[in-house]
Amino acid sequence: MREDKYIHMQEIQVATPRLQSKLVMNSAFLLSITLVFIFAACSEQIATDPDEIPQSAGSCLGCHTNYAVLKRVASPDTAAVGGGCGGDTPHIEPYDRVYIGGPGADRFRSSTHFKQGCVSCHNGQDDTPDKSKAHGGDFIAHPSEYATVKCSPCHANIAHNFYNSIHMGGWGQKNMVVTRSGFVSFEQLPDGLKGGYKQNCQKCHASCGDCHVNRPKAGGGGLYKGHDFRRTPDMVDNCIACHTSRGGHAYLGIAAGTVPDIHLTKLGNGHCLSCHSKTELHGNGQVYDQRYKVPMLPRCDNCHGNLASSNPYHAVHLGTFNCQTCHSQNYNNCGSCHVGGDGARIPSYQDFKIGINPIPETRPFRYATVRRSLMAPDSWQKYGIATLTNFDAKPTFKYTTPHNIIRWTTRTKVAAGKTCSDNCHIIKEGNTLRNRQLYLFNSDLQPWERIATKNVVVDGKLPATWGVQ
Image 1 (cartoon, rainbow, N blue to C red):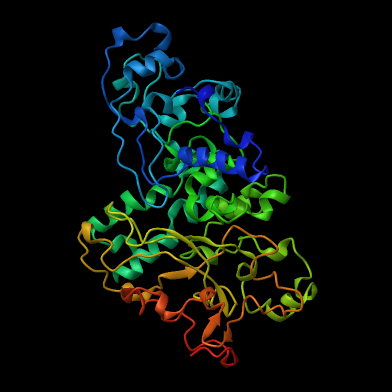
Image 2 (image 1 turned 135 degrees about the vertical axis):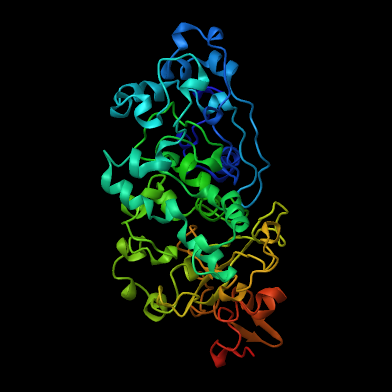
C-alpha cells in the first residue's frame, strides 16, 4: 500500500482515556511486532524485459516512484512464518516496501542524501530499465549494513561507534548463547547454531537504516516514509516495533490491570529519547557483553534529585532495592525462547518478582526486580545442539527494569495507620505468609532451571524476623 494508506500511530495522542489507548495500541502492535525478516523486493535478482518498462521509469528514481511499474516487476514474495515474543510480522507487499512516494519522498528529494545519487549508497547501475542490470553486480539493498563504508564518509564517529554497539551487535544476547553453549566466542559456535541465531535472534538487531530510513525488520521492513532520512526515529513504528514485549507493552500500559508509564503521560507523550540518549543508542565504540554495563544508560537520579531524603521509603531502602522494586507494575515474562518455531514451553504472562540481584558487580542493590526469560537446555536442538553443555552458567530469571513506572503501586500504597512495609515485607498471619507472591522462591521454578537460578531465589536469604523458612 502507498504511504498515504498507512496510519502513523504517533499522530494519535497516547495520553488519552484508557479505552482509546488500548484501541490505538492494538492497531499499532499489528503493524509493529514480530521476529521475521521479509526481504525487500529489490534484493531479488529477477530479470525483467526492458521493453515492458516505460522510458520514464528507466532509472532508479524513475522506477521506484512509479507504483504501477513496481507492482509489475516486483519479485515473488516469500514471507516466512512469524512467531516468537513479538508475534507474526506484519505483511507489507514487496512493491510497497520499496515505493518512494508521498510527503516523505518530497523531503528526500530535497535532502543531502538524495544529492549523493542512488548508486553512491546502493551501488548497482542507474539509468537502465533492466532490473537485473540495475540490481546487478555489487548492488546493496541495505547500505547501512555496511555503515563503516557507506555511512562513515559523512558520519565517521557514529558509524565507527555504532559497529560495536548493543543495538548493532547484540553482544549481550550473543554472550548468553556462547556462555551457555560452553564456548569462548561467537565465532567458535558450530555453523548450525550460528545459523539458528541469525534466523531467530538477530532479526531485532538494527543497522542505521532500521531507525532512520526503514521500518525495522520486526515491523515488516521496507521504506517507512518514502526514503526520507528521519533524524528522530518514530517511537511506535521504529522503537516499539522491536522493543515490543518488554518495552512498549509496558510503557504504553497495554496489559490488563496496568496503566501507561508516568514518563509517557507526564512528559507530553514522552519519546524514548527523552531518557535514552543518542550517544547511548549509537554506542561509544566499546563492546559490552551485558546491556546494563553500558555507562550511558539513563539513571533515575539524572532527573530525580535528593532521593535519599525525600521520604521514609527512600531513606531506608534506596541502596538496597532498585527503584522498580517499588515503582513498577506487573510486567511481561517470556515463557521460553521460541527457537525452532515450536512456541514457548510456558506462555508469556504478567507477573512481578523480587529476587536476589543477579548482577551485583554491575548494579549495587541487594534485591531487584527479576524477569523470567527462559532458554531451555534443549532450545537449540533443531540446530544440532542436543543440550547446552553450560546451561546452568546463567540464571533464567534476569535483572530487569520494567518500563511501566508509576508513583503509587500496590506496594507503595498502604492503608491508614499501617507502616510502609505492610504491602512489601512478607508478614506471617497464622498459617498464611502475606506478600509471599512478590518474591522469587525455588518453588516458583521448573526443575531444569533451579540450578541455574539458585543464586537469584530468596530461599534462606530473607530477614529471619519475617518467619519464612
